[in-house]
Amino acid sequence: MARFNWRGLVLIIPLIALLATPLAAQDLASFEERTSTHVLDNGWTFVIVNRSVAPVFSYATFADVGGAQEVPGITGLAHMFEHMAFKGTPNIGTTDYQAEKVALAELEDAYHAYQIARTAVSPDQDQVAALLAAFEDKQEEAAQYVVANEFDEALSRQGGTGLNAFTNSDATGYFFSLPSNRFELFAFLESERFLHPVFREFYKERDVVQEERRLRTESNPIGRMIEQFLATAYVAHPYKQPVVGYMSDLQSFTATDAQQFFDDYYGPSNLTTVIVGDVTAEEVLPTIEQYFGRIPARSKPEALRTVEPPQIAEKILIMEDPSQPVYIEGYHKPAATDADQPVWDAIDDILSGGRASRLYRSLVEEKKIAAQVGSFASFPGSKYPTMWIAFAIPSKDIGNEQVQAAIREEIERLKTELVSEDELERFKTKARAGLIRGLRDNQGMAFQLVQFQTWHGDWREAFRYIDRIDQVTAEDIQRVVNETLVPSNRTVGMINTVQAEQPEADAEEGA
Image 1 (cartoon, one colour):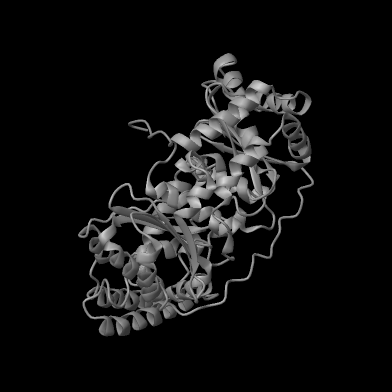
Image 2: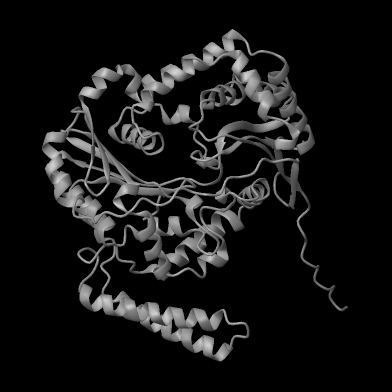
């Protein structure tokens, strides 16, 4: 089953979009009456929202770990564990766990032996081939115990829908929906996979992730350019690393590494779950305590230590490729939890929020030099100091230099001219309207609240954010742009189109 993963440009979801829920249609006080927060003794936080529209509920669990928690050698492991979380446990996904456990241990020993031989300074190729064959034999032995997709099917048989997950630079999320009378099934399955996941089919799934990287990065010009762009923009912070991982890491990390990663980052104190639907805290808390409370407490992981140093010089990346041209420029900015984030949301909306935005009108409609243009307030993540970026896909026969000049012209306008009251009010009206008409389902609400609870420590910040938006002024926008969108803080990435290399012509007949 394909998993939902946010990568590249689709990773960038401004907080305004994340707030597009029916929350603003009601005041915070009335919402609090139907919402309760509970922290289990082991540290797992639950937020329960009673929303009795239909006899169903949805949930979202956030593990406060993503690509930013990875170190060289294990990049891609957060995403890899997301895949493994669907492989089952000692009670799910196996015909005989005791026999499988022995087979998996032998498989891991065989892989380690092969890995040591493969990565030796002067590998003995005959030995490497023999150890690879032995590993593959052990892989087949372990596979005989696997009951494929049992976790997924246990849910679908009971009316479960929307089973999926995602990994990004900041977090890993898991979610699905069930009828309310199947709440105990949810509690068992969700707690079971975070109590004792079994890393069965690990190396087979690792091959799947490698193919995913080939498809989305190595065979995709924009994917390749974005990876190089981030590696250029960041010198220290792990935001420079691809969430999918580097290929050499995907070919080397082990099930042992995955177990250590799970032990480090999947303790209950690092997990938050929001449940929304036809449930009440009084009804479900005993079940939550019964199942989730059985997971042993572990210390919360240490905070990320590395802070990206201030950029002091403009950086320019030019990638020549036989594909269409692409232009990106980005500027370092504070995390999305910063007090000025609503200002960045206003900048985004004024520059690229639809057909009335400045970049669209200028580059697409008036000058006709871009087929697509936009900007994003938080790339590649939101939790740590990140970047604001603008991008454009030039029109046919238009070079990157022309779209670059047009984008910078609009940035300079923001620096020297206050945005109009009409533009500012249009942004605020759209934000309020989005809160009312946006995601009207349980799952959408669960997503919003779990993110605010995880990163702000309080789901109520989802309500307070609209008040912060109302306080944004034209002077705020001018101040932020002048402070941040400066050449020494800028990284440019572009694809310049070159002619594809032609295969050598066949020799003429008779030559």
